[in-house]
Length: 133
Image (tube, rainbow, N blue to C red; front, side, top):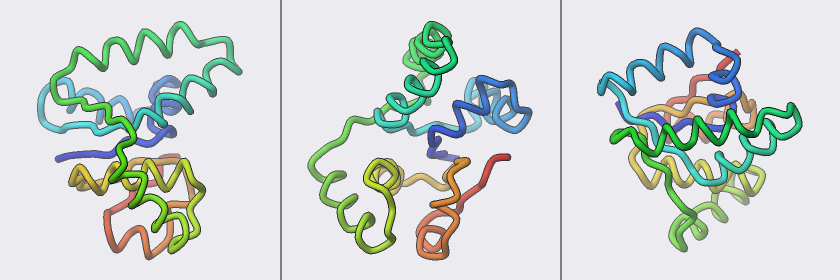
């Protein structure tokens, strides 16, 4: 399965939340793939800076880059254009719209998040959403 991992996934994972650890292990074992936006990385770094845990976040991102079925995507012009439509049509904040557009452009089959902004029918009609606790 191709899974879009939003910032909440990494926040939960850094706290050893069981569901995220399970997914991480599935990715490491080759059962699933993760898609990540560079904006997710930026948000995760900001979150970890507030907690004086930037070094651990940087180490995790370094490790992710070595895993063949983890893909970190930059913001392309196509993603930017699509995200503008999602921002207006679904009333998503800009960063969330860009992350969402990244997931859709890479054929993700599931969106993992803690962000309730994705818990709306217009989003769920395009991609299943799993809200992490």
